[in-house]
Length: 303
Image (cartoon, rainbow, N blue to C red; front, side, top):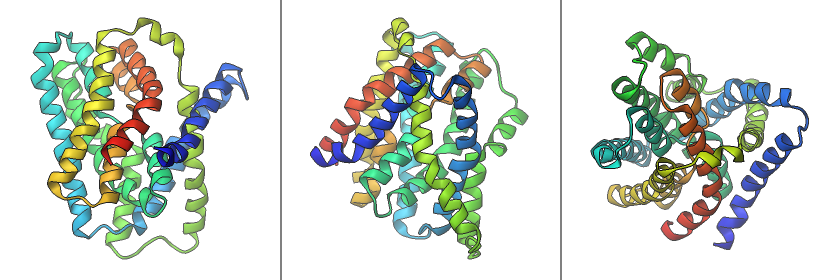
C-alpha cells in the first residue's frame, strides 16, 4: 500500500491544489476555462499523438487489451440496463447514472498510469484511451437516444465523434504508427513538451472543478454511481484481465481506468442531451472525492 500511496500522492496533491486555487480565486476565475480548453484541445492531443505514434500496437497483448476494454464496457452496459427496473430511476437520472458508471476521467487515468507504471504505463494507457473514448462516446449517445429527453440525430452523433480532439489525436497517432511514418523528428520534442504539461494542468483543472456545495443534494443515485464505478467496475476489470490473460502491466492499466472517477465532460453531455445535469454534477464531485480513498484500496487489493 505504501508504494501505491507514494505513487498516487502527487496526483491527489494536484487535485487539492487546484481546488484551493479556485477556492481562493487564484490566479482568478478567468484562468480556468481557457486552461481547460488548452488542455483538451492542445495538450492532451499532443500527449496522445506522441505516445501512440511510438507505442507497440501490433502485439498479442495489445489485441488482448483492446478486447478486454470492449468486453468490459459491453458487460457493464448490459448489467446497468438489466438493473434499471430494480433501481427505479427516472430516464434522465438513469442517463447520468450510466455516464457516472462507465466514463473515466482521462486526466486522472493517464496520470495514475504514469505514476504507478513509469516504464510503459502512459503508452499502454494511450492505447486504452484510443479504444475507450470513441466507444464510450457512442454508447453514451445511444443511451441518451433511448432514455434522454433530447434524441440525438445520426448526423449529430457523427459530428460529436469526428470533432472530438482526443479521438482525432488517437487516430492520428495510430495512423503514424501503423503506416511506419512515425513522428517527424522536428515535431517529436515539441509534442513531448506540450504533452508534458497535459497531466499536471489537467489535474489542477479537475481539482478546480470540485464544488463541495453540490454534495448537499446527493442521494441514492449518487451512492449507486459510487458503488458501481469505484467498486464493482474495478472488480469486473480484474476478473476480465485474468480471464483474457493480460500480463501484469496491462492488468494494472486496465484497473486504473476502471478505478478512476467519471469524466467531468459528462456534465456537458447531460446538459446538452436532456439528462439530469444536477445529478451528474453531484456524481462527478462525489466520485472525485471518494476515489481518493477507493483508488489506493482497490489497486492494493486487486493488483
